[in-house]
Amino acid sequence: MLLSSVPPVAASLIATTGNILHIAPASRGWKARAPDNVVFLPPTIGKQALLIQIGLLRPSMMIVGGQAIDADVIEQWRISHPFGDLHLIRRGTSLDNVRLNLCESKGIRVGNTPGVEASHVAVYIAHWLKRADGSLPPDICVLGYGNVGKELVKRLLDRDPEVRVKVVDRHGRSAGNINRRVSFVEDWSEALEGACAVALCLSLKGDAAYRIERALIQRMDKVARLVCVSKPDIFSDDALQTLAIAEHTQLVLDCAPGALDAFRMRTQALGFSVSTWRKPATLTTHAATTEACQCELDCAVSVQVSLKALHGIVRRTRAQSLMIPAQHASADAPCVSIIGRGINGLLQALMFRLANYRVTVYEGSQANDGVGRGAVMTTANAQHDDYLLLANPYLTDEFNGVGIELFEKLLADNPSIDASADGLESSCFLAGITSLLLRSGVEFTPKHLGLVQIAELSREQFVITAQGGGALDGISIVHCAASNLIVDGATYSECITLGLIWACLVQEIIQAKAAASSALYQ
Image (cartoon, helix red, strand yellow):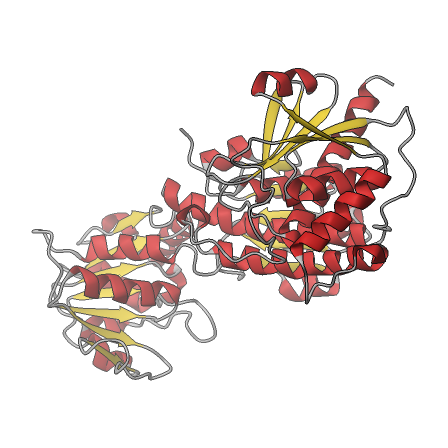
């Protein structure tokens, strides 16, 4: 089974956007399940080939790794897509290779995913700090207290109740609220004096380049291990020369393949190729390349992309009237069936009636239909579900915020519902919506459809199942007997704000599918 930490709702939202160029690493699960508008290109693609692809695909978003996004790439992107905002998302933390000033001048919004890799990188560092017997050294020096440094310190303290950690931090913070076994110092020489186990996880910002000089290496114990996940430019030339001739000091360096190649070329140019060092260095690209780490990065990126898609859907919905028509749909209008008469089923029926569909609403399963199970919530609470990682509260907050905007517009366009977002009687809202849908020609039937019947019906029209109550429930589009999960049990909620968003999302997906199907036969 392929792992994928991307919630189905995020993939569904992403499907409503324009083309997305993905030129960063990706997990196998996301490559297999990403919507068709996500075009994966190898991270090693040459610049000229990339420029050609940008011109051909005219993407509205690009997801990049550590490659250079220079003036040529930015200019070509804006020329190929001259109007509207463009979004560049760095799948990772560092933006050193992105021309941020030029992006800003060209209307390209830039984001990244800081902290996502931190726990995985910390595990890598802790592994390489261990001694031959698997134990940690009693004293460890950590240079850098960003996301990785904080996670590393926490893991070291949890793993060994006796370990003491000295942290070099430019802010000179107190360890009083962390742990008595942690001390903070600002003086690098003091921190490295006699150190035999050193973790280097500094961001290469400001004056950090070439910050590790010969004198600091010489401060360390003669038999020391230095585990570095910073970019190799953190070392000065004389520091590298000192490491090259050291008999017992070992460097473990992990970074991107391109950075490692540049490091090898640099040492060779300096006259002490890394392959000839007295104590062989260990060079790897493993710290953030595990499948679990790749899945978490994909989840973080997909959340950013899906929220941009969400705001696009809301903007398009707010631009149209949400007044439920008084007249029935025409006899030749397309048909759609909804399974489930809970709040989600009603809101699905509402959005398709607004799109001039003939709508039939069937009863769902008696246990999971959502009818008569108490008050309907206006907004949703974030569910504590490991499947959604740390993104769930953020997603829920965003969904609630834009959902309230849609709900207020719905009430304003349909004053007979006699409710407000602040003081909502769920029974009044459900009764008001149902009455307007009946007047508009929506047919409600007490009939229950089994899976075989749903599959048969889907050969003639789109069928939306909107049922909650269990981990396997949610919202799906069934067409030609194939079911496409839009919202799964981890994000499904019977509340008005999320229900409106799901309804708008499903409407856009089905209308796009219907338009594509029509084009095939023209």
